[in-house]
Image (cartoon, rainbow, N blue to C red; front, side, top):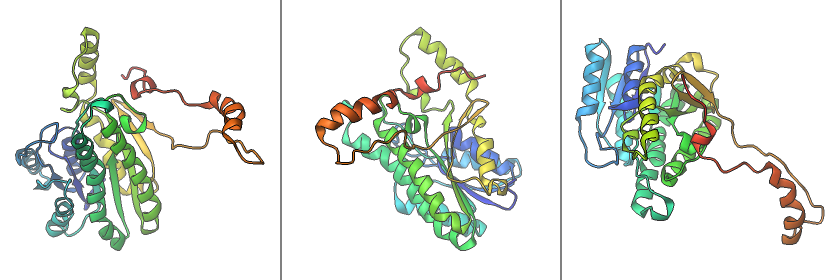
Length: 302
């Protein structure tokens, strides 16, 4: 499905990114495998993961190069796209997957943990996307797949920084889809539920939690995410843009966008008193309940 295309995958050295890079190469794409090789919390760097994936691809008869730049820096992000054009002559697809976690309760979160997570997920996705935009515009084609999260779409506890960044990615993707449609460029999001090394960092609370996590690990392989990415990169998805999908095991979700639930008008204008007496009692039955992602996606996956 991707024969003749050039795809850049950030965070392509491990987990979901690795599976996506391998799948894109298997589908015929030439792949730029970007990975800084940092730890789960974004520390250190190691060129090994990106190069290992490139070796896997070439051993299987595919074509790939490694890029070990950090997406947190505009220059590093730009180098990913420039490497694609320099080596392969073009860029057809961008998969924004790179990131790390710095989980903490909001009232304990440090400023650095906030800014670093926003920088790698939201700003990093912007930097890479922006670097590819003019190439896409000039050639009249291109596809973005941005990785968001159930934490960003639905919400979660202990991940204010991550949730904010991932929610921002959804709106960024939608705006790109609106603005770039006239150039034949598509932009979509995927909120994956997959077992990766980031989930390994979650502390086990009790025996029931341990059993649940072991079941998730057995079922939620990162390779489950890759087929949807390959499809969204392909010409078969030419009419799919501005959407947010979720993938969990063998399920694929389509998420709704925020919309207006109810409206009320007061001809003479609202006062604090009329809001308290009339507006809020009328709207309250339609208030969405506070719920984290696990409360919304509460059914078992098989």
